[in-house]
Length: 166
Picture 1: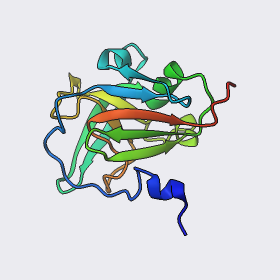
Picture 2 (picture 1 turned 45 degrees about the horizontal axis):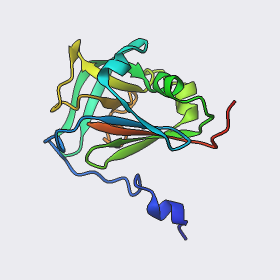
Picture 3 (picture 1 turned 60 degrees about the horizontal axis):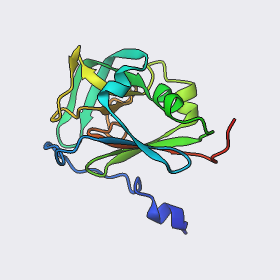
Picture 4 (picture 1 turned 30 degrees about the vertical axis):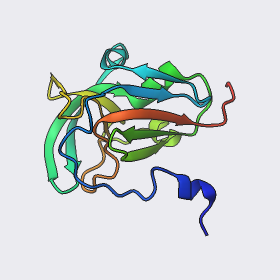
């Protein structure tokens, strides 16, 4: 039996059809805090955070195979959350403008994979991403083969938790 939360969960089922064309011109990213308040995030906002580069990353695209390795540069997702929310949290949902999304748990961010930290990337091999490339992409450096964790055209970063201050 599934709960009401599971049936209303936009990240389940986790299917994704290839989408080579940007889903609209609006590239605004909305940061949604635990308390439900939203504010926009821009590439410039991400660039003000400590810059992180992770080499040997791959782009895994449904229907297009795997390409790379690449070096992605951006802000660690943990740094983005820490800079924008003081509430305690358990997970973050990163959702694309085309509706595809990924859930990342706090434990993944506080103890990153040896491949590197999860990023909101804005540059690929030293060049800023353009809108067709995603502008801002969620990069999970350890992913190599299934396209279920990477999010192109990030539209929303939703922080989920109990709303209590530490």
